[in-house]
Length: 381
Length: 100
Image 1 (tube, rainbow over the protein chains, first blue to last red):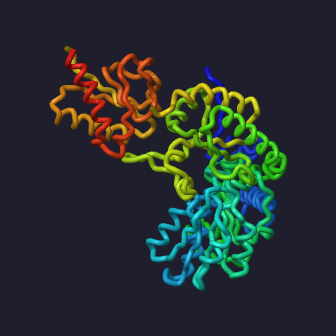
Image 2 (cartoon, chains in turn brown, orange):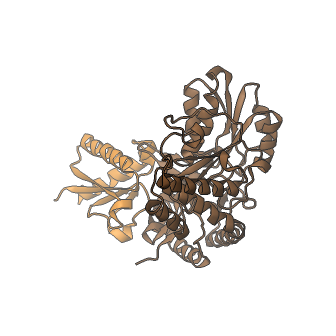
Image 3 (cartoon, rainbow over the protein chains, first blue to last red):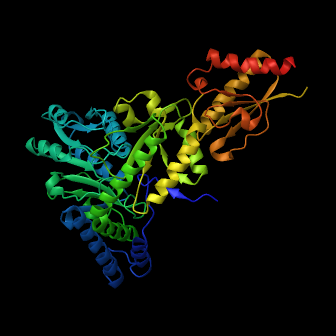
């Protein structure tokens, strides 16, 4: 049987044992409803408070500025809907980019259908948004700028510092989806000048179904889920205590390891690029080779069918992901690679490799052996 | 002579595979060619193609050496169901079979 090698950490990560332990405790000992006034409720409340403090510490904010959500998609939705819905459609404008995650893009499109105005900024061939484009797009009625931190397909690190400064200068609220950054970058929301920041547990060795939105003190939002008074009246419903415990533990884990992991994964990424490019001249890195998310690598194997390559790699026990998606009538190219204006042939031959804490050099060596063997068999005749 | 059997091979997208297979079935009917069209999703059904006289593949799953029958790349049919060069290659194989 082939060894199983997981190289799709941008999609999700395995739940770390320290996180599992924290969650098991919440499922077992701290089972109470945090809103209850007795000991069981107080134990659960204490656990939530501790996790909130852990998450806050991980991004340099106050615990009271953390709102737990069901994940980053809900956090993104709350940031965008919650801001724009404070205003009538004809009085609010959103600036975002063409390379955002669908959690942002589809929310923005929904807002457009409601009558709000949205500007989608382009990205260059490296997958970067130009801060000057942000400045130029600001209008008197601009209420929110939402630009992701690290792109999930090509790893480009957006100029968040600069965009945050521009947003502050113009008194426009600034949101960033930091899902792919939180595990590897030391984040301080004050340094970044962000008012809202989304994060997810399952990208940082935590469980699925839990995330958070940082909401800077004094930032008003319209809630999307109403009912009880949970999460500072911004997200009603009995809290997902085991999930929250897991998110807190996951944040503690990555906070301790992210500096070292960033350096280690950058080295592995470089090794992987060199190894893949040694296989043939038609192997191209998409995005920047330099200042990137060290865990993301988008590679095009010109002339190869990426889907067949993925199937063959999977057959050898290696899990990676595609740079395109298919629907019933066509092969739908990645919106990120399309926004970067890459040729169709390059997009159709793209695979994404993403690395994580368990990734080893031995795994990369195995991958390189398998790609060398598989590549000639997946070339389109 | 047994009925000509065509295997349409696709990847993860079963919708696309079925659509192309249906289009080919209609095409063969219109041409008066008596043949059976079957489908095989290589992502789910493995890397052994069912027995057939001709493999029409949407992705480079099989080679002629592996399967011992002609293999044609039909990816161009996704965008253009009447793609002339691809249709011609298919008809040539069918005619060669019935000519024997």
